[in-house]
Image (cartoon, rainbow, N blue to C red; front, side):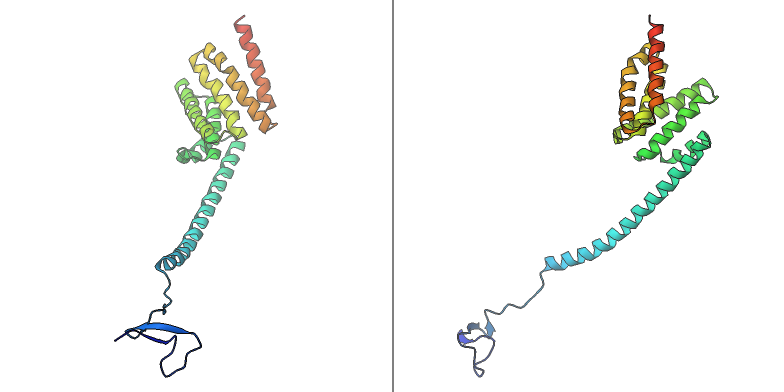
Length: 208
């Protein structure tokens, strides 16, 4: 069949609109373009639906984890206020490998107080070293948290004590710096700074 001009959207029997002519080839209008939704759009719409469901599930999961963490922290603080440091430690210990700074510094705090209680020297040393490692990790994760600087300063001193007086004196400037950072963030640590000054005076008298 030869190509011929036919009215667009009609036949020879139906008069076309003036000037609306199209080239027909083998009975098909070359200008005809059936509307087919691109595969990419179909995929995009499908992804939106899946993502919406997925995001909803993720949001619920995040909220659930956040609520569980808040409850855990509340229970830990209640135990601390009751001076139940061992129970506090046992409560948070399963999460010591987490990257939650709120858990890490509280674990360090519990270990510090446990080391001050009556225990064998080796046990006390283990508490100090474990607490030091945890607070170092917390500082690496978040260096803008006042409690992290506070307990890092405390553990710098207690950890250095196991290396001798000179090591402890060497760490004093670092201890002071972290306490100053802590004081900038919270006014509730003035007593720690005063304790540091007393410690400095003590060492000055030792090395006179």
